[in-house]
Image (cartoon, rainbow, N blue to C red; front, side, top):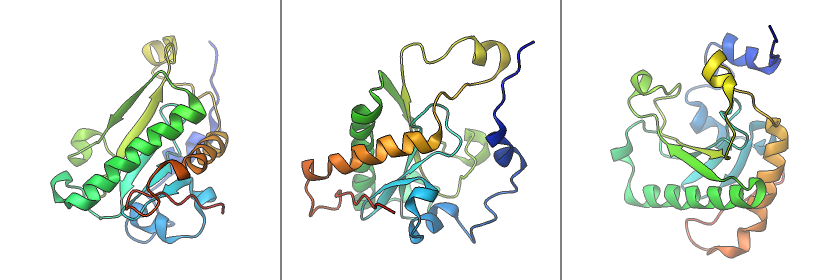
Length: 181
């Protein structure tokens, strides 16, 4: 039998939540000044993009509104629109940096029943997909192989966000600020 080694996953398996953050991790991350270390790719007035530390595929990101709610219906119209515009920009950045063949985009609404691990703060998952990106591993051994390090994906997507800054209305709520820290 062959073995697949993924030693970085032990952090997820052994974690007891997000102990390093007081309160909600999705509220705390944009307050920090360490975007690169936290994999925070881009910021808008009402939402931000975070690269998933434990991705389903390379580039798996989350678009997260600043509003702390687990209920989709509780987002005000301005926050909802800003989040959806940032989701568009996320896919534009992924198209430029990763060239996927498609996407899975979705929410885990309803806590544990929906499969979400952070139910108290709404977030949209954006998972780039490629033709042939799955093989026998998930089917036979319930294992997914991630073919790129999260830090390498961060660098490619961060640059793609940066290069699209002038394409959009810089004065609007959907303007994205890409930090270099």
